Each structure stands twice: as C-alpha cells, then as structure tokens.
Length: 441
Image (cartoon, rainbow, N blue to C red):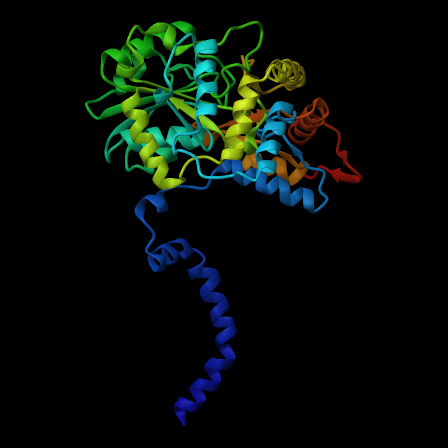
C-alpha cells in the first residue's frame, strides 16, 4: 500500500522533478554526459566549433527571419567567380564524364598551379611538387597530419587565423603562441626564437594576415625562411591572400629568400582560388613542397577524400589560366572598401586601428568600450544586428575583426549602427529597416 501511494505521488511530482533536474544539473553537465555516453575522443572534445562558420549560420538564420542584419564578419568576396571557371565546370558536367581523379589532383590543374608558381613566386617546380586539395584549409591540414606527431610543437604568431590551433591539436600536437611584447601585431624574430625548443616541428605564417590585413615586413619573411631552412624546421606559408594587397605594395615570394632546391626545402606553400578568385564554394586549394612530402600528403588525402571533385578542379584550372582581370578588379574594389571603412572608423573617439595592407579584414581595438570581445560581438548582434568576429578567437582579446568584402553601403551603415550602439552621446533612437530602436543601455 505504501509503495502504491509512493508511485502515485512520484508520478505527480515527476514533471517538476524532471524540470529541476534537467535545468539545474543535467544542462550544466550535458557536455560531460554526452561525451561519456558517446565515448568521444579526447581530441574531439578539445576542438571547438569554427566561430566564423557559426557566425555565417547566425546570419542565415537572422536573414530568414526577416531581420535587417549586416554581416561585417564574413570572409567571402561578393564578386562573381570568373566566367572561364563557370564555363569549364558547366562543360565538364555536360560531358557526363564526372569521375574519380588522382588523389593529388588532375594534371590540368597541377599544370596550372606549376605555371602560377612560376609566374607569381618565381620558382620552377614539377607536377610532383604539387598537391591539389579541397580548399587551402585541407592542403594545410594534409601537411600538418603528414608531419606532426603527438607532443610536437608548432609556433603560431598572434593574432592568428582561428583554425590554426585546432588543426595542430587534431594531430595531438601543441600550438605554441608568440605574442609581440609591445602589444603590436608583429612578434619579432628574437621573440619567436625564444619559444623554439627541441620539440618545435613547424612555424605557420599567414601574410597578408587574417585577421589584421597586415603584411609582415619583407625582411622578416626573409629571416624566417632562412632560419627555418638552416634549423630543420618546416615553415608553412599560408598565402591565400597574397595578391589581394593595396597601396602599390607587391606580393612577397618566400622562395626569393632561399637557395635550397625545392626537393630539399622546408618550405610548404599553401594557396587556393577561394579568396582572390572569389571561388569560396569551389573548395580548391593546393600545396607546393618537396616531392617526398607531397607524395605522403597525397596518400593521406586519398584515404580521406579520394581527392577533390573533378568538376571543381577543372573550374579552378580555368580560373588560373584565364585572361579575365577578375583578381585585379576584386583587389581594386577591396582597396576602395578599405578606404571607406577607415574613414568611418576615424569618426569614433575610442577605437584604435591599423590600416590594412591587404585581405579584406581590419582588426579593431574596441577595449575602450568593452574588453570582452565575445560579449561585445554578441551585444552588437542583439542590439543593432551587425555581425563581427570576436578578437579572442584570433588570440587577442578586446578586438573585433571587421570585414570589408561586402558592399560600401553595408560598411557605412554597419559602422554607423556600431557607433550608435557604443557612443554614449549618440541619439536615443535609431531606425533599422522599418524598426525603431530605442537605446536603453
């Protein structure tokens, strides 16, 4: 009888007990229980979500809801892919001969990359020195997986692209961050050397840099190349923005500073069509390195993806060999947008900003307004529907990455909204679309 009464009382209280348990205990420990139940690997638990891809998802949701969102966090040019690329892809599809390719890429694309390397890097390489991948990110990942063992160390300069630390950690290796003592975006060679240990396997350089848009000085690149060649340290050169530079500055070729033959070199050049050809969705990138390393990278890639899509490889080859002025047109448009952004940012009282040399990013110091970049970024989304990327994800707190690859109107309107939200003496009301926002903070 007692047990029957207990069951009746418990059944009545169960919904409330369930709610209390889930809200106060389970949700706080959900990640632990999920990983424990699913037996997730330690590396998978360690890796966070890509913040830039997550922000793109947030933008898509807000747009579907009819919100007047302005995306100043994107890394995707708005110009169209070259017509030659579209026609080549269409022709390949129409042929109905869409088959597997060699794991390291089709000859047509690799020949185009060889010519590109000769034209823009002044380095003659062979087909065996080239690996085509599903994006520059995969090309870099193949190199990292080929070279790194657990506990190996990789030097990463701060600020860095968001994926570098996670890519290193996915191999069980250790990212070692080097910050400039003077608070700038340029760690010195001596500061880097101080972090090098017997476990140091590689260094990653991205110039022009995401998120700052700044070019590392040519003397620094030269010193870094020579140091790595001499000290048996691999140097990953992430050159995905190398032709998107401004103010009549010239692209820097890492090969200009070494006499070491490609097949004996420690340099691994990473590039692709995503940024300069506005072909982000095509997902074609490449690596140029010594042929023994490329051979092993191709072997790994063969097991992972069987190689990139033949349709997209054909399109990329056409873009690289085409005569359209698409890269220069994009570069000019970006330089103009950069100047518009700089003019808008100068109207703030409290920010600090360094003029970008290239890319389509600007890394802005907002610490006067809020030193917590994650909180500030979310505040701007919530209050004025402007998307930026928190600086903490690039290794520097208090900054926001602002992109200028959209329209001039988006830049002007987006910065105006940010200024209204942050400046204490701005008007109390602002219209965003057909909505009137009243400042209550």
